[in-house]
Every structure is written in structure tokens, then in C-alpha cells.
Image 1 (cartoon, rainbow, N blue to C red):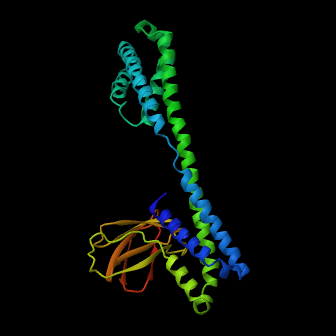
Image 2 (image 1 turned 135 degrees about the horizontal axis):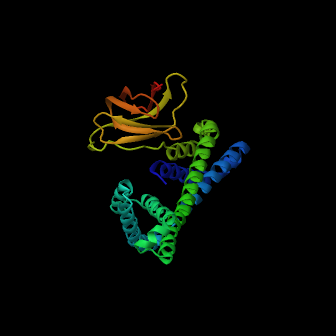
Image 3 (image 1 turned 180 degrees about the vertical axis):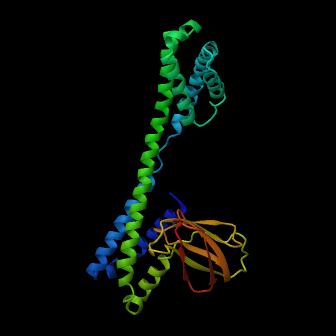
Length: 305
């Protein structure tokens, strides 16, 4: 769960506490009660998916380490046999490949696996010839089992990671759905309570605060701050862009933009300049003036083609 998701979930829990406190007021308006129930369901579901993200894949670490070490040891033996065979047959390319292979096993497991499989394939294809160099069927069988074990080690935790990704995606979907019902339904019915139920109205607005992407790291407590919401669109179609990076001049942070987020950035009051980058679009500069009042800065980005 990233910082933005955590902020939305925290806001949701604050709102649930407010709804519970003022349940009698809410229940008097059937549609508001329906919207609040729907919103509560999404927040509760998101919280449940958050808990499921704690899939533990650390237990595979020692097994993977042991399997890989044994496979590397056997792979070096097989690569030596193939290298000698390559020398004997004047296959300089294959000989050089085996020399390079032997220096590459310290890389990522996925890279090592491809090298292990390459050696197994060469050893299998040339097993009759390699018998003259000392390779036995038992050696090839053992090595092949080593390679399969390494691949299995990769796939087992990968399944856990995939499940974790599923839970993250489901968490995101629930949070997005909660924001839709909050923004398009619940918030629309709240102004009626400003005078009739001022305590409910005030506590709802206090709990319903936007997500702050980050704070200016060099600010001092005496620096007056404001915030702005960033919106990024395609210059030609005016469609919202899904992803981007925002850099404000003199700010140490680079902010990650998501069209599904609030994208609120806090900066010192005054004039600002910045730059936006997004996939398949040209980097675009922007300017603005930060005040006490929240505002929106919209950037239109030109496509690369």
C-alpha cells in the first residue's frame, strides 16, 4: 500500500467515525443513508485487502540461496566441459560464451536461470560428445534437476507476489469506488446541513480532507504554506493522462502523479515554477501562484507524435 492509498484509507476511517456518530441524522434521509452505506462498504473492503497484502515470501529466501549455490557449482562444471569441447572443435564463439557465462552467475536469479538453461541445452544437445570429456548421464540428470529447482524457487514466490499484486489492485479499486460515491453523492447532500446540523456539517468537512502528496522539505515552521491540485491533460484530446512526474522548482521532492488521485501538493505561498513529465508526451513547464486558498493548476501536454 503506497502513501496515497494509505491517506485515502485514513480519511475513509475518519469519515466512518463521523457517520457513526451522526447515524440518526443520516438515517433520516434514505438516499444519504444508502450512499453512506455504500461508501462504508468500500472502505471496509479496502481495509481488508490491506491486511491481505502481508503475504510472507521470506521463507523461500534460504531455500533459493541453497538451490542456486548448488546449481552454480554444477553449472561451472558443465560449462568447463562445454568449454573444453568448444576448444577441441575450434568453436571459438562457444568457448568465449562459456567464459562469459561463468562470470555471470552473480546476477539476478532470472538472468542466472537463463544461463543455467543455456548450459543444460548445450550439454543435452552434445551429451554424446561430452561423454569423452567426462560428463556422465548422472551428472546431466543432477544438473537438470538443479535447474528445475531454481526455476521452481522463482515461481513459488512469484505466485505469492502475484497474489500480493492482486490484493493491491483490489485495494485500489475499492478506494477509487469509495471516492466516486463520496465526491458524486455524499458531498452533494451535505450543504443542507450547514445550518440545520452545523456540528455534523463541520465534523464531516474536517474529516473529508484531501490527500497531500508531500511537503516541501526545506520549509521552516514560520513559512506560510498553501496547496494546489495538479491536473494533467493531453493538449490535443484534453483527456486526462494516467501517470506523470511533477517537479516544482526549489522543491527537493519529485511528486508522482496519478489521474486516480487527488494530486494535492503543498508549497510555500508565492509564485512557483515547475515541470511535468508524462509517458509519450513532451516535458512541459508550468507556473502558478500559491495562496491561502486551494486551487487547481492544469497542464496541457503535447504528444511526442
